[in-house]
Length: 260
Ligand SMILES: Nc1ncnc2c1ncn2[C@@H]1O[C@H](COP(=O)(O)OP(=O)(O)OP(=O)(O)O)[C@@H](O)[C@H]1O
Ligand SMILES: [Mg+2]
Image (cartoon, protein in one colour):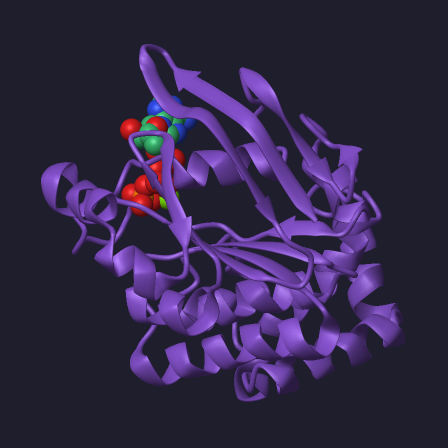
């Protein structure tokens, strides 16, 4: 579904991603792990069109999408969430969801209060869809709450919910489990599994919680210092000496990332 071919990107003298190649197979939940600063989010930013690679190519179902802007990728069914949730804090949870389809159509809602209001008031179909998403993620009880008041975990669910408002086929999740409590984490994992099974979403998931990765992902890609160092199922990676060294040697495996 997504082919990443020899992608590289430097920031000044720092080689954040170096000649990384792998494939996210259609229908898979592919994991992407590695110590802090390994280059995982940078790779996501490149795939999702937030920043261009210095070299290399990204293909989506055989089509070259390298460097395409985010809204074009939206149209092609490729969406992503951020390591730090990007909710509109002064709008309600339901309004946050309802904005997504309009944004996908390319309307600049931030600049046009009027069209935002129109979307929220007039589009019954979008309203119904938002309510379905709220029910699916079991956050309907906070639908009229301002998004800024949600807990960290609820914001992560809302972020996932935003991907469900589009006709997504491939979804990139950057640390969906970070800051999420045990109960919500189970809910989040279940939602990801159901979206994969019932709606055919393909996922690529960055995550530091190895139990979550082990439960959801096969295969799992491992990056360290910008490079892809291993791939396989979680059980075999746990035994892999190179992977263990990447975490123990240079890494800080216990920490949660703070980049974007
Ligand atoms: N916009 C930027 N400008 C300069 N350096 C950057 C930028 N984005 C990332 N980096 C650097 O690139 C390297 C890789 O960062 P990246 O955020 O991709 O790591 P990560 O694997 O997502 O880490 P974490 O698990 O902590 O989120 C880091 O050294 C980081 O400081
Ligand atoms: Mg990151």
